[in-house]
Length: 323
Image (tube, rainbow, N blue to C red; front, side, top):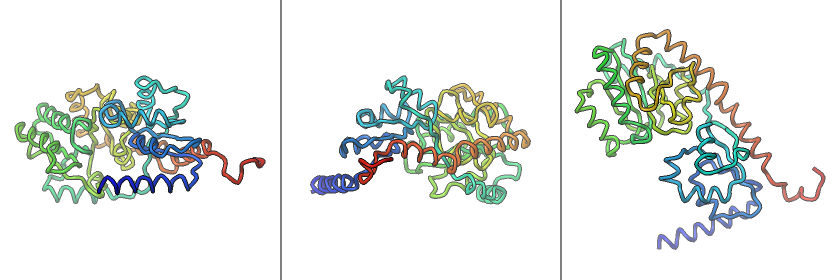
């Protein structure tokens, strides 16, 4: 019965979409491949905004991406890392790709009272006034590097056992095995009193506002929105080289980029940032300026609209008329 209902719903969806007579399709993820193949609207151009990198495409969207290749006329890549992967791994012609990064509302995020967010966080977890909060965020697991986050904390306290640093991971569920694994490591390493794992939040901004440093421990992240959100709040970041698009924002002036999975090097940079509020402030101001210039909604949405307008087929009543 469920299959019959689903089939009926799909036929209804296909009929409705065809009735709209779309002039182009903007697909905002590789996960839309199956739907593009199912709809099969002839002579309607498709732009696919790719937010995925090699491992995710291989493991989660392999069949979807085959359909994407069959149906896509223009690719939008959220980072140079994504663009290069499309070219090198899937043979996409570079002339068919343009880089259009992710975006956030900088003005909205900038309005957050970070002093208030910090006071609330310190009170909630009974932390000292001089605590330096190193945050991370995402669904725990291999890709986001929740295990790496624990190892970074281990290396920090090996170097400076007395450092007034607390590590906070926001995301996931306490009932998920991928959340339990890093907590298990914390217990074995004696880090329980220096690390907090907080479940996914409807609005994580008040927690982000308490961070002094953002540790991007991802192994693969195309161009994570979270680094833009934290950047808009003037929080400097440390990330790994060759792990996606974060380094394209951080570069050499808005945080630090360290060798891939070098937790010792990341620990050194976190300690450097923890010891200098002036450095954190300088790098934080720089990353905010870069996010505002490169990734604000008001900057990126016109670029997406430009792609849509360039690709749209003529309106039915315009066919045969002078442009």
